[in-house]
Amino acid sequence: MTVKKMQKRLFGTNGVRGVVGKDLTPELVIAIGEALGSMRKGSIAVGRDTRTSGEMLMKAIKSGLLAAGCNVVDCGILPTPALQYIVKGQFDAGVMITASHNPPEYNGVKVIEPDGTEMGDEETVKLEQRIFDRSFIIEPWDKIGKETLAPALIEQYIIAITHQFPGQPGKGMAVVADPGSGPACLTTPRILTEIGCRVITINGIMDGNFPGRLPEPSEDGLKNCAALVRSSGAAFGVAHDGDADRAVFIDENGRFIEENQEFALIAQHICHHKKGVVVTPVSTGQIVEMVVKRENCSLAYTPVGSIYVARTMRLLLEQGKPIIFGGEGNGGLIFPEHQFCRDGGMTAAMMVFLLASTGKKLSELVDQLPKRAIIKDKITTKEGVKILEFLKSVHPRDILDETDGVKIFKGNTWALIRTSGTEPIVRIIIDSDTRDKGIEFYNEVKNQIDRALKE
Ligand code: MG
Figure (cartoon, rainbow, N blue to C red):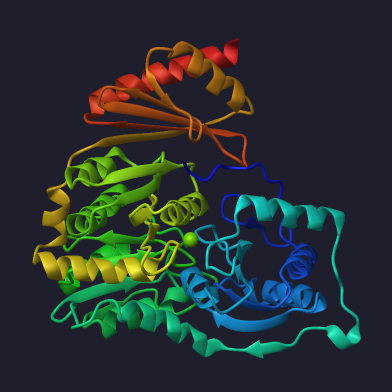
């Protein structure tokens, strides 16, 4: 049993996102604050990433929350997982102003529940309804909330991670950290230094213009990071997206590690030492299932979106299942003993620990993983539902999984076809043991989609 997806109007899989001043206005953010403050009375922690619009939108969210009578604790600039860690057990809710990996002109709002997880669909639908109905509880002059500044709370997050890696496992290891001018400038170099590494930082000054690279840590964007890893002789490079809930890696030869391989590598390590269940969306590469099963552990699959992974992990844990790890195939990994959200800083520290405990080079570890070929494509169409129905009808004898879209299994190969919740797009992923087989299955699925569109 996994957490199901619900249709939302304003919030996507990762909160509200949009171009600042166009889709995402201060008026909308004030309304989100007023609505959330009316639903979650109490003490609310707020934080933001380094975007140029961050200060403006932070003031808007605070205004809405204070008007609704909440007390606001401003944690300043910090990674999303740092705010989630701070909120957990200490606040009645949290709000993060971030657009994660989106380009600089974007920003967004992410709502955090008292347990540190992102707000689930059921509560988000209620929050949206309040915004549309303008059903706010605006307090009179003598019941308006108070604001406190607490930039030092970020220390709690750094300590929580470093305490999990005692004995300085990074001693003698040089690491290149690329926070991409984002909030991890304040955390990842510190975390890595405190667990013993010698840290060389690139794009390490916070800047919402992102002068060095865009917030998405793509292979292309990390060319300078990769060159620095090679020239410095570092053990690896680690880079984050714009709010540092994701971490991606460069090996000692400057090679970008595909994120499913990264997930598989860390899953393999965790499953080797603990037995239990790994939770991940249906879109994650087969390589993860292969290494997890090889270590006699099992998987639970969820709809696509980190929130479904985190909430399913919690749900299964409450049911007594041994949940040991979770994550997505984009470098967003969840360590349940630390917290139930993706955490880039924790992932960076884990990589140090993994290399120190295996005594191997990152490239060697990656080369030992099973080989898979992944093909990704997207089609712009509003006919997503029609396409999915057609695909189900033409694959009656294949194993189908409908957790999110349609996943069609054919021997060692699968195809996942799913519609986007926010754009008129149908996404296709093919995961195969050989590239030729993958291309063959892709062509078959693509022909069927073309037929569905002609019907
Ligand atoms: Mg992110």
